[in-house]
Amino acid sequence: MMKIDDQLISRLENLARLQLSTTEKEGLKKDLTNILGMVEKLQELDVEGIEPLVYLNEAINRPREDKISHQVDREDALRNAPDQDGSFFRVPKVIDL
Image (cartoon, rainbow, N blue to C red; front, side):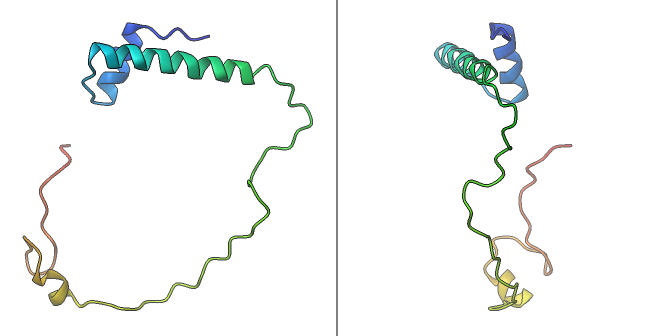
């Protein structure tokens, strides 16, 4: 089984852009260890000849036809916008590339 140590928690914290307290790190370490333990236990099951579960029930999804309705023209849509350029909504930049 994979070892959940402080180095792995720090790496996950960095990748997820989190700043965890010591208590949160210990809790995360415990939770991840429990999850891996459950997965390891599941791997002990004999699944030979068992069909994979694709759907939880027999219901058939019948999507409705797409119909355009209640359209708002551009001018009306932009009328109450806090910031716009006449064609588009303007929003603060949220992704730095």
